[in-house]
Amino acid sequence: MDRAQLADFLRARREALQPEDVGLPRGVRRRTGGLRREEVAGLCGMSADYYGRIEQQRGPRPSEQILAAIARGLRLSLDERDHLFRIGGHPVPQRHPRGDHINPGIMRILDRLADTPAQVINRLGETLMQTRPAIALMGDDGRWTGPMRSIVYRWFTDPRSRLIYPSEDHPMRSRAFVAQFRQAYSQQVPGAAEIAETLLAVSAEFAAIWAEHQVGESYLGAKRISHPELGLLELQCQTLIDPDQSQTLLVFTATPGTESYEKLQMLSVVG
Image (cartoon, rainbow, N blue to C red; front, side, top):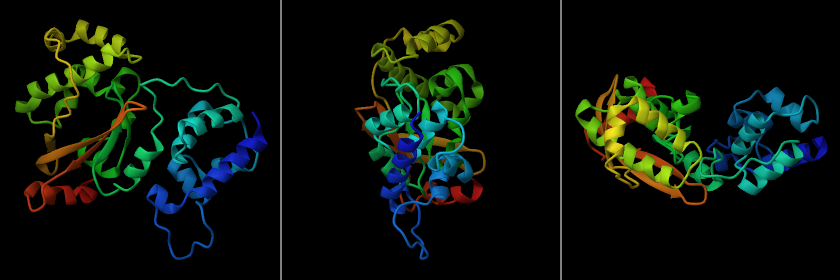
């Protein structure tokens, strides 16, 4: 671990970021450019004291999980993330389609969608990040660990995961999930084979659809979400795919003037 280089690198990247780059208000009392330490700490999901000690060359060596959180919070590119891990004294993470590091461009778009339900998922259907309205709409998908991180795995093993969709839409959703997942399986995304093997053993529904060999990026444009407080919402799901890291940004909108549009405006209240 090179404490001096780590501190200098973090300071330089923090000072290069502007509040607008990460979806934060500039405020009238900001006298210098760049982000404050406490703002970066909030973006990284850690205390300002802990982050400050790293920049001040104090405290223990940051773990790989901490460095990954810092890389995401500072909107680092993959090359910058790799550099961060090297000077932080850890092996560089392997680059593969299941990676959790989000492209800085995707992160910048997500920052500007703070008032819109949006989330980033990878090839296995694992949610990497959600806006607050997305959590209010669909629940906190970032809380899962292990194979439960994958919506495909949850869909066929946990009946509670289906509550966000009307029951009459479940067969369509099942086929869409399997079609998306088979593509990840055929591309040998790490973890896909293990999930498929488990689901074939425990879910007759999954096994039957899997046998049909449907393949495709079937992120259906129209989605009906059943919210516990707002009721049924009819939404459009727009997608932006990052081919380099095989991640997809999903953005949920409703037609202005409709009842679903009004309900979306209420997410900040009920959420």
